[in-house]
Every structure is written in C-alpha cells, then in structure tokens.
Image (tube, rainbow, N blue to C red; front, side, top):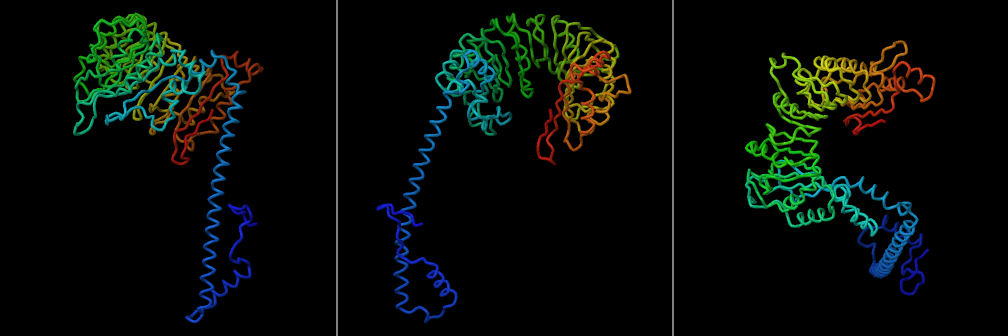
Amino acid sequence: MTPPCARCGNPLQLRVNLSAEELSALDNDLRFESGQFVVTPERAEKVRTIVDLVDKDLEDYDSELARLREHIMAVQAEKRRLEIHRAKLCALSSPMRKLPNETLLRIFQHACKENILQRYPWRWIELPPTYIKKSRAITYLSSMVISSVCFRWRALALSSPALWANLTLETHTMEKTSDSETEGETFESDGLTNTVIRYLERSSDWPLTLTLTMFDGHGILSKEVPSLTHLVQNASRWKTFKLMGTYLLLSADMPSKMHFPLLEELVLSHSDSHHWYSEDRAMELDYFVHSPRLRALFTGIKGPASEVLYNQLEHLDLRGQPLTKLIEALCSCPNLKSLELADGLDASNSRLEQGVLGTWFNITSITMRSGSSRAVFSCFNFPSLNNLVVSGTYDTRWTADDFIPFVSGSSCVITSFTLQKVELLDVDLIAALRVMPTLLHLEVYACGYRHNPITSHLISSLTHHPSTSVTLVPKLHSLHLKDRPADEFDDAGFVRMVASRWFKPGSDLSAEMLAMGRSSIRSVLLEFYWSPRNRAWCRYV
C-alpha cells in the first residue's frame, strides 16, 4: 500500500513504473545487452527522463520519512509521559507510602552506614582511596541521596541526626608525584570542607562515628586541614574515631588536654613506611587520656602511653608488639574481654620454655594472626575463652601441637572457632576439633594450595555414623566452609555429612539425639573461590 502524501494526505503517486514486468525487462537488458550500439540516442534520452522522475520520487519519500520520524518521536515522547504519569499514579497506592515515619527511619538508618567524602582528584599514587567511581551514589553518599528523593524523605532525613553522624573522610596533602611539582598543594577544596560542615550541622548533637584516612607527603606536616579543624571542634561528640594514614594529630593544633566524654572506640593506625614518626605516634594517645567511656583501643604504636586509662578497656588490639609489651598491656587491663593480635608477637625459645606466664579470666574472645599463635598458646591461659579466630596469609602454616595443650590447660569452653587463610593439614584440624566438643559455630576459609584442610577426610570425620557413639563436634549449629574451585570438592560426601547432622525438630530421632548430647545443624554455608574453569564464584546455602 502506497503511503499518503505529507502535503495533501493522498497516497503518494510514483512517477515511474515499478511493475514486475518493467523490472524484469530492465534486468534482462542489463544481463544480456552490451556493446557501443546498445543504447541509442533516443533510448538514452528516455533513461535520463526516467532517472529524473526517480530522483523526484526519492525526494518525496525522504520528505515522507522525515515526517514519519517526527511523528514517531512525538508518539514516543507522549508514551514516556504516559508511563511517568502511570508510575506516579501507582506510587499513590504504593505500600511504601503507608509506612509510618518511625519504620521508614529505621530503614534509612540501616541503609546509611557510611558516607564517604573523598578529595578529588586523588593523586596519592602509593595508596588509592576507596573505589567509588562506578558505584551508585546510594552506596557511598546514602544520606545525601535519600534526602534528595522527595519532600517526605528529605524532611525525615533532616529530622534524623543519626543519618548524618557516620562520616568517612579520605584526603591527602599534596600531589604525590615523582617531580613533586605541587608540593604546596593543600589537603582539600572548599567543596569538601563545606560538605563536612553540612554533615556536622545536620548531625546536630548526635554521637559521631568518624573514619579519617589522611596522608601527609614527604614528612611535611601540613596544618591546612579545614575539615579536620571542624571535626576537632566537635570532639565532644566523637563516639568512634579512626585515624589511618600518615597524618598526625600533632599537626592539627589540637589542645593537649581534650575531653572525649562519648568516645568508646579508638583506632590509630599509621603507615610503617614513615618510621620517623614513631615517637610522635606514641604521643597521640595522650590526647585521649580524658575518655571515661573508652572501651576499645586499636593501635600499632610501640609502647603504649602511660596516661591512657587501660584499666577501663574491654577490647584491645595491639599490632606488632613483642611478648613483653603484651604482658604489660594485659596486666594494665583488668577488665579486658576481647583481644586482637597481629603477627610480630614473637618470643625466644627460652621464654617459651618457661611455660605459662599468666592466666586471664575475663577474656572471652581472641583474634590473632597465625604467626602469634605459638606465643599465645604456649604462654597464656584463658579459662573463659569461648570465641577464637586464627587468621594468616596464603603461605602461613599452622599446626595443632600448641593448640591442644592450650585448650586443655585453660579448661576453656570454646563455642565459636574460625580459621582464615591458614595452611593446615586436615588431620591437624580434626585433632583441634576433638578438643572442642562444645563447639557451636565453625568457619574454615581454605586459602592454602599446598595444605588444604577441607578434604574428603575432614568431611567424613564430620559425618555422623550410626555405628559409632562418638561424633566430632556433636553440638555444631552452624558450619561455614570456603574452599577452592568446586571441581575439586567432594560434594556427595558433603551432602551426606549435612544430612547426617540434621534432625527434624520434634521428631523421635531429634529427641534421641538430644538425649545423646547431639544437636541438629541449623545453618550451612558453602562457598567456592573463583575458578578459571567455570569463570565464576559459586555459593551454596
């Protein structure tokens, strides 16, 4: 059917004949006729006339196509308007609009865990900032995004200071380049400072959770940190304060005797490459002497400051401390409940041969690197210990030789055990599990490639066999395994193990197993590392 004309509305009339007979005749002429006498002057004139008519027809069709495109664009625009209108109409009946403000605020508080503010552009080539370039804004500026959705959400966000009280600031002094052309560059722009001020204003009097990552180039202490100045002015509201990087509080013009009435958690972590700051780092702890609520301290500073109120701490993280310093810290913290230790807790063989150096009854949780495990297991007793986490690197080896006497000597009841990135033989892990019959939660992350504890032997040992009365970790409630690629895993044995440990609640079998001191497994999480064969991560729950 011929389309209508754009001007008169009538069907377009072709000036040339495009019938099948005419087209077939032209094809035959092109196929069989050739030579200099084929096209006579009369025929050439006729061809030129037809070509002119075809050009005019093509112009008409181009005009018609342009008109149709405009019409299609107009129809599409009208369709989009209708879709937007429909979405707005549906939003009127959305269940979200029926939520009370209190419930909606709880959702907002769950979403607004952190707000990341970064210096831009970032030129510190040694350590990059948190990668947010391709992330959605809701993931790193959640409070700002939520307050920009609609009038109601904005009013709720502005009326809730807690949404603005979690702030992460990442910045540095100057451009860290080989030629150091921008040595005089300051920490941040006015836009970054103004944003920090806006967050402080909207957080009102709410306790602040601050994470600062600051780098000071070439050891030059810059005082041009306007945002930090504003944060220091609100020090009375600090609840959690984390300082990482190479920047020192000594260069921030902070009063020597400040009061932090709400401070509960303090993290001071610095780059070891700037070793010339070691004495100044130790002095930083003196700023926080007047922190009556301080309960958790994370620091890698050599030699803790004497004025810090260690006797009120409940959690202590000492990184890179020798054994003697650890003993001094433990003696200074009578209320300590949890302890974290990194590698570097070394001790001489003569020191280890002395046996147990102390017993601490209040400590219930220990997280340590595998390099410090021998010193801890050989020199200390923790009778109240119920949570133990041992982590390492890909080439870290760990055995159960020191662990078994430690558990027996401490007479502790361990209910949660986590092993991360530690190369361990399956027989050593099984031996360690045998001395923890009260274990409820077990996590094993097998990152080693030479010694992987997650083997068929381990799975078989965890399987309950009706013919035997002894079961490895009989009270196990949750199991989390993170193994190498799935093609190397005994999946059939794993399924049998889980099936043997699960009992239907209220059944006769469940009652019988409970009478025997066994519990039904309730949670199983199995993860596999990225495999080049299947080009994907695998996860089964």
